[in-house]
Image 1 (cartoon, rainbow, N blue to C red):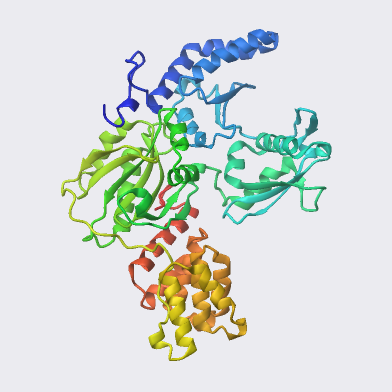
Image 2 (image 1 turned 60 degrees about the vertical axis):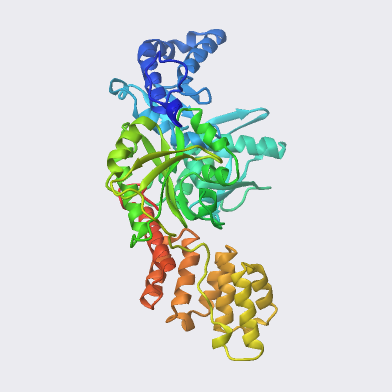
Length: 534
């Protein structure tokens, strides 16, 4: 049996030795729904007449239908033919539920409203009771401010109804009430953390107004809270080697849990998807040293997959979606979530045939199995390492150009510490010197160290303090751009990398990060027609 054979597309009644792929499970659910839609409709019309036992029996019946996709998917039903698949803390479902809804048969679209996650109350006030706490949205107050994670918010909350509640009950009540008020999707994409306040604070608003306030803070004009289209940049200290874990030094993604789990040696995130028949994978190929711009070529391959293979998001015709991408020293990676592996493979082989590589698919989990997907017409050639920075590596002045004496020895020490990755020691060494004795060169050494320690705010503050001296220095512009791109502010990074290149730093690091910055900036402005970020 091949690696993905167990997720093959199958018809109802197929042999039990294969597990249905997510697309096939979704089709089974809609077949079931069509067969029983009349019964479901009748239940909603007469639910007030049913006793608790009959209602529980009907909910169990609905659970069997939803269970055709996964037993881990929960739902609410009621109102005017409203059927809500709830997230209930299972964030992976944000990447699956929209596809289920997009496959709804056309004859039900005007009658039924299906939701991927609780949609929120749209500013309406509702009473809410849980355990011994009883209040309404108007009497729960919330404030928010930008978090350190870009385009997310840290919130504070208070309600007099929580006065006698311990933290566990107060936090639990608040999160559930908040998700019912603003919707599970906005809460997921917009909130980084929540903190209980001791009293009503000046900038707090009622929960009925919080959704509007949060949207204004974390979303661009006209942007919806779509987790699939919200990408972030991550950096990894590549150790060197042929496995993804040792090869990758930079990447982008829209679901941090799958990335964190992979590099943390945990297969749970993979298992959540695979239990629904969806497969997290990464497609990869070995980089070609003869390729003039490996980043642009990987971007072109990704765009080809999006346009010709994966299908338009929300169309109901997708074979999967894009999770992100990454660059390694030896390989390029494109991260995918497959709904129908068979259909994806068929289309991908046709789309990738013109590229001179051998393409592989690997399960996105530690120790995952790998299989060859296809070979391009040119076959894989002898390949070399790709460019791209694993750190702010641009060299500072050496002892040879620093004169003699104590200063020369200091610079030699700083460069040796940098070469050995001892960035904290660089900070300690320089900060023992009075700040009024830091010249332009020492300030750059310290800013570079803070960049490599991922304290980008401190790096920027130092660089801005010597901005006048650095205006014609390619290294200064590179470091400012470096800090901005790793703060996910690609639009601010672009002009600095462009200036660095204009001033003569046209090496692989600057060119690579300029391309990455442009992609991040384009995504924020909704360009490229969708989530194409590399």
